[in-house]
Length: 268
Image 1 (cartoon, helix red, strand yellow):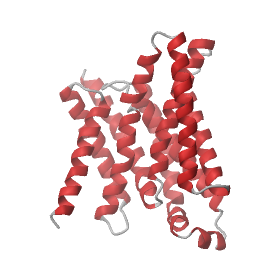
Image 2 (cartoon, one colour):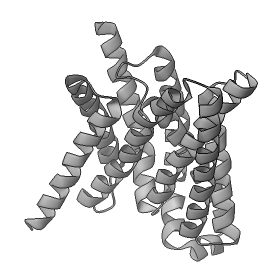
Image 3 (spheres, helix red, strand yellow):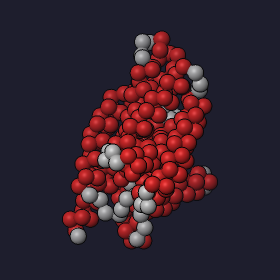
Image 4 (cartoon, helix red, strand yellow):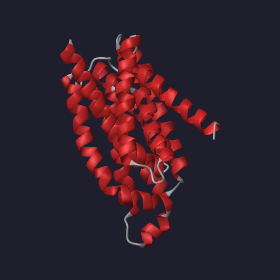
């Protein structure tokens, strides 16, 4: 039992590292809304995967389907925002597509699978308060891929987010950076959602970067990592105490942090 608990907390810490790597870039590039909408695409992709396995017997792991759908929709959002619409409109259209996928295949899944709804709920609330070796490997792999690349492009992302035309004039390929940034975010989001759950991912992505920017003039990556790991660890501990899914514990702790920020601001 102690080994399982240790594995769970190591996995939670790995998830915190993954969140810390993307939360601050999302905040300073004003793309947090995009990351949150990616959780909708992950859910839609998961439901699509469950349906395809139940109806056609494909046997494709649901996390792979969820990740592919998330990546495809992230590229679509990048393309729409680059050529046709503003970023917020492009994101709204992407949400409309992912929501449609969720509704249609959610209904179809109920018709062909008696356990479909419970599998969907695992993606919404998190699979379990106890992690598996597979969860840890998946989370660690994503962190190893995403964190270095995000650090590598963070300076360019800052410049592009504040002066897109100036960045293009200096020779930066804004389109490539946008595609890479959106794809990394989608990959991280799908990985987090398949283990922590869509709800916990939704909360975790927004809070660390926002808090780091609130207390740092430029926003500290160290603060983002620290806050994300602390939220994940304390959230898991809270969930185990209350015997609720990890998303519930993380949500409670994140809510307290947000309330603390509000109260601290009001006292100034």
